[in-house]
Length: 588
Image (cartoon, rainbow, N blue to C red; front, side, top):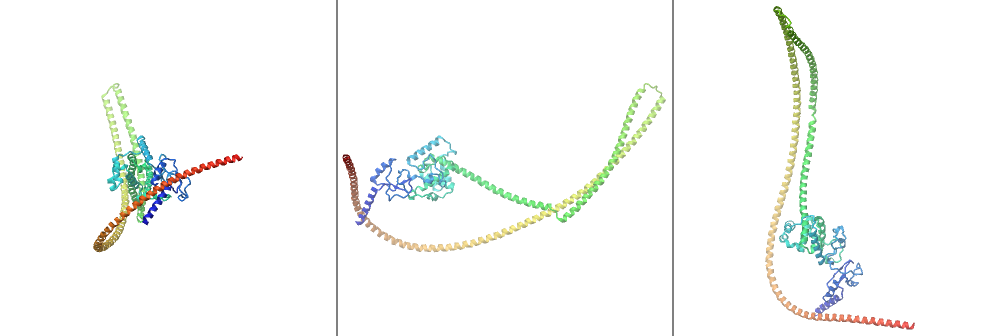
């Protein structure tokens, strides 16, 4: 009974304190008031009527409740106090994300404001239609989210109707942020380190939404989404969610394509780099080979110098003899040409004389009286002269033929000498080619020998490396076998211990079942006792409630009487002041 009386006294004291305590408490920050506890039932109706009036200012808290930072003038309570962002996020601090849009209230979102903003967003989406990306269909968005964004049971249970549910939309945005920014899920549930919030337990449930809202603002600038508000997280509409998800899907597809092109370019760059390194190494090898080919060995250089000196001397001798013979042949040919030209002139002159003589003969024939004897003698003389001239012409022709034969023999001799000289030069050239070919073969064999030596070294190093790997793998195999043997022994030992424990557990379970039977009987007894105590407590509580209602009625009567007394006192005071003033005026 003493315990029940104390409990009733404590309850009565708390009820009286709640009746006279102001329902608001000032926080550390002077620009905001927080609701510390709900008002009692008898004051809730009056509190609601006062809260509807925007000009209502609550009474300041007592001095023992007010923090030093709080100003004396209390601010009016706002219905959206729970959704208000920190001061740094409102002013656009670069450490906490971008500044919010001007047309979106930074104080957050009550129910009516959220509806009006969503409707204005829908009207803007339908009217202007100036999005930088295409709007995807609902089926495509659902299938894309199932395939690429969500995993496991989330993807299987995702449907079209989930685009208007806050929990699924928030989870979808969180998965998109994890894909884009590679963020961990626990980052969304942590309080910002530089925010001094007086009562962090009040904002524990809203921290994920705040972090998600700030991260989505960062994603909005990447995806070129025209608008994103807090109502899109708390009260999402299907149309706004489709617009936002279309922008995110467009960005993810663009990101995937650019990533593929970047990886392809990276692979091609690596291949080109390897080819360039191979070409540079081969170029250096070829330069080295060219230098070796250009450098002649000293023993062969002496032979080549001797051969080159002999070839130059032979060329000088051949040129000198060829020039002398060529000059003599040219002189003989010029003389023969002059003689042939003179004979041709004489032959032409004789032909002209014959033609003139024939013309004179034709003219003189009709004039001369022919004498047969004289005519025969003249004809005979003319025949003799013709035969003489023919003989002279024959001699000249024979002489020209002899000269032509001599000229042909000279040219043949000259050609033979030139052929011999050319054959000598060709033999010299073939000798030098043989020397160079032998040198190249020697150098190629040396290079092949060096290459094979390098291959042999590489094979030896590879063999040693493989032997080391084999030895390490054999050691690992031995270790694994030992571990496996130990695990088998430990497993057998565990099985034995489990079997013994199982037997002990059976015994304990039997003991526990007996104890449970005893406890159930005792519990039944306690229940009957508690029922009787509850009945008595209910009676006491009804009595206390009656006392409490009587006390409240008496308090209200006391306040009314006190108000009447104060009014009477003020009225009497005014009367006394008036009488005093009259008395003072009469004395004056």
